[in-house]
Length: 251
Image (cartoon, rainbow, N blue to C red; front, side, top):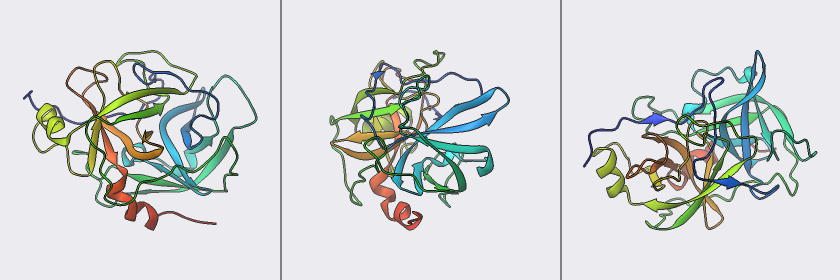
């Protein structure tokens, strides 16, 4: 086992760079539930976290993305693939409120889940669709190949991408993940995935992990990005389905 590796959130800070590690650009409309969360800055808007569409008014993300933020300073963009291109498929919506899990810990990153309530509804199109969520208690077997998407960093010191990235990552068992990070850091409410050179990174927090068409994870934390023996750690969506449904706002 390695020395204790403390959780490092994968939320991007202003002017940091962001991209998935080891990935390739996604096609337009390939991941219609994907959302970029953006903040209004001095030099324009910038992406700081990912999210996914739950319904017309609700975006799923992680709690660490929302800590200390004024909802008036952020907005969600759905239907986006390439930041430098305006296709007409994008929908930018202001935020009404944010909800963090009441038991979220900034230290351990346990219960790292949150939702964003939009100020006005999204319109569902071929390019904007809700994520398919798993049933409560669903388990994903180690070795299952899943896909994580996002605009996070190419490497721990990598450059900024304008195109949405995707990368296939194998699920690791929680036992193996705890062996890597230090026993007790990876809770039952987390799921691990990744391999050397393929991972989520800074700026990918809140982004979805898909397996067999369902969103089973939310990018949460890790030790570096794509390092050998340190898979990325995700919030396990099936563990929080009841909480997500209880905090979803409908039209």
